[in-house]
Amino acid sequence: MAVKMASDGLWQGENSLDFALPLLAVQIAAVLVVTQGLAFALKPLRQPRVVAEILGGILLGPSALGRWGAFRRTLFPEWSTAALDTVSGLGLLLFLFLVGLELDFRAVRRVGPRSVAIAAAGIVPPLLAAAGVVPLLDLAIPAPRQASYSSLCVFLGAALSVTALPVLACILKELGLLGVPFGETAMAAAAVNDVFAWTLLALALAVSGGGREPKGPPLAPFYILSSGAVFVAFTFFALRPLMARLARRAGPGSSSGDLACSGAVACALLAGAVTDAIGVHPVFGAFVFGLAMPREGGVAERIGEKVAPLVSGLMLPLYFATSGLHTNVDNVEGVAAWGMVALVVAVAVLGKFTGTFAVAVAGTGMARREAAALGVAMSAKGLVELIVLNIGKEKKVLDDTTFAIFVIMALTTTVIATPLMTALYRQPPTATTPESDGMELKGGDACPA
Image (tube, rainbow, N blue to C red; front, side, top):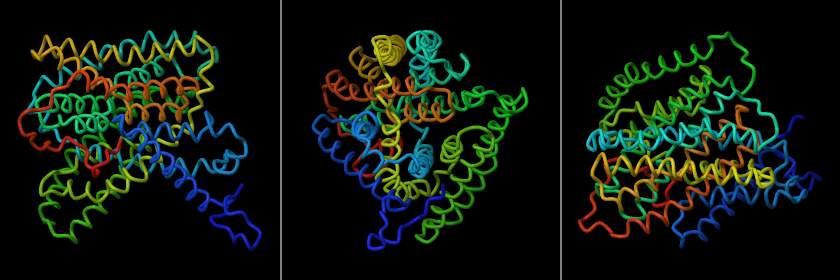
């Protein structure tokens, strides 16, 4: 049915909550009030803000307040979900642009092969474990799945092996470790992990066929991967040099800075539209375009300063909350399903921890206590995990129960990361902590995720 944008008012006998714009405004206000209240309550526990945002969505969703039919029909009716999901998806697109924009690989080059080795050691074990988790999921969840075994393995492998770089940055900042060698190693390894995660996600989207029967030619996955590779090459080898010349010509003036910011945001949105047309999710295009933005002249930093407050303060919390709204914990029924929750959490934590710990101690000579703290840090999921899960659900690769199981896992691994790291890395840095070389995501004092 067609929904009008705004009502004629209460005095004309119309309920504003039956119209798109006022309902969306009330929904956003409700999400912000609940999530900020939870963030304040969890602040003494030193939890990342993403924990409060996911919990806020779950509280407003079918697992808690959404059980009350009148609440659900009034504040979150089914016809309103498209608008809410679109606004939150736009926030996600811009945030991934910022993630790419503020990933500076100078720290990776400075740490050297050590960061690549640590990242690989944390990726491979959980990625391989996904092949064993899928058959167990089939036993624990009797409902038939729509996705093929291979596509589900790739998606779950990505979900189990990722590290949330923004969450890790928040934890390290909270503990005062961003500028010390331990923090640099962790951030560099997480940056490598992030790039791998998006590459793996692009591969998963190419081979999955959206969890449905393929509608295109048999070679469609090959065409998608080839087109994606061409897009990446064009962005880095054609657009990046052009943008660098324009940045040098524009200079540091305020008016040119505003123009550069508007142009960069527009290009990031267009890049998302291009990768969606290719068959890869729009967030991949925005992320790659952010990575390709030149760092000369402080252009990237000025764009981040202008865009980050709106995205991290308003649009991104909405995305996390909608993830919670789409999560129904009641779908996880019975001993077998909750056993799968415990197994998935164990695989996600122990897979990352053992690989990272072993390579950090044996390969880099790191002290055991620091290596253990690094293993815990690399287990934090948060943002990237939720993006993978939401895309998997959107593409019909993950059913509602599997989605709920992995959201619980993401929440659990993020909640335990800060207290475990605090216990393992008690000693604060003795020297004056230098400034981070661009690896921290900027967004004010409040961490974006």
